[in-house]
Image (cartoon, rainbow, N blue to C red; front, side, top):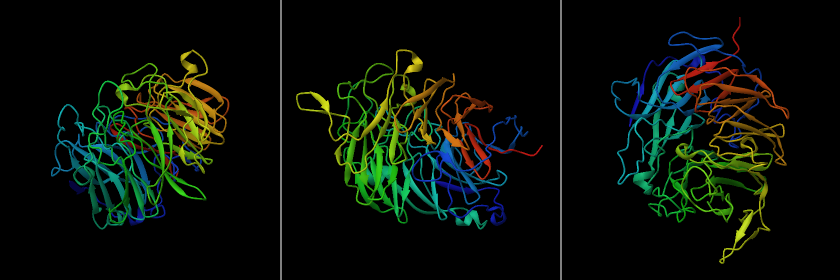
Length: 501
């Protein structure tokens, strides 16, 4: 590990938000729903080459060839995950994962935490692909930031010295999931935003997806390479001590778990939902780790086969979203295998216990409806045309004003009634859509690998508002904070706002 402090300037005068206020994964709470309550988000901007700033661009920080770790804005600082393609610190050379920090006011680079690349694991699998960035977003609270490195280390930093201009962030603790818990992670060759997972936080607890995996094989489910290692672990956020661990998917993994945990706060209890590597979404008691409910996202009759298309079982890559007392998510797959039929789900686990899947299967293989099902609705297809189908998706859905917006890997954007699942419209964007959606001020922002941002009206009728473009690909979610839209391309971070003429 190497930390560095570069270009530090006194931040006291530039801190413009309450300490600990946090814009994460496009939203502002643990429900993972990427909706901002702010107004006046920009509709039009123009990127520019090198040192020039285009229309409505406040500042730009260009620093990498692979940046996808979604922006987090808090305490006058902006944090992003990237790599070390253009090293900023001569003392930290070579291939590394990087958590970089910029000043919110003007984009000045302040600090980085770097982690050297892990060597290839035994056999054909890699646990840390060369030049890969940090994939997930960090989480911040009260002068603390927690994140997962490319080495599957969970790190807690004290950011107060950095925020107040007194020095670099200070490491408080680190948990090495590989060395301490025996985790054998998988790392996708083509990493997307958050498909290595991000932490979630509630009270004194930090929930961490470990990435423990099975060897990638051609067909079927397989036991975890190390079945004794957890897929989900709860840590004390102040000390890093282990509170509880879960191994529910260890005997039937498709490959690895890539989704982030979701905290569900209800009147009766606080739960943690996690989409796991066997295609099930499970809910746990937040404090004890007791398994409360399980939902199988696949039809019992579908086979486990490895490939791009056809009728087969799927996993959930995107992080589930909690809104209006319901939980929403879509089927996905790793980028390398992301084409094929998918499915969007809405479930209600409130008050449910045990298996709440739509179907049950007996020992003879007979399938019947589950009387204890928590399924509210799902959508796979409405006809035979390509636009009538839901395709695989790696980005989380977004819910606002009774509408659910989902984007799939084939470039289709779908609008559903969030309560009933009725589809109001579908649009073929002809774009590669991977970063999470953002909804703000009645507008829907969809970043694309093509560099274009598709901006739609949040409505039951379809309308395009604008299609501004960046020079480089966008694989991360867009964040809107205090009148500024933060767009992270693979080569840099842009702060975009409505600028005076």
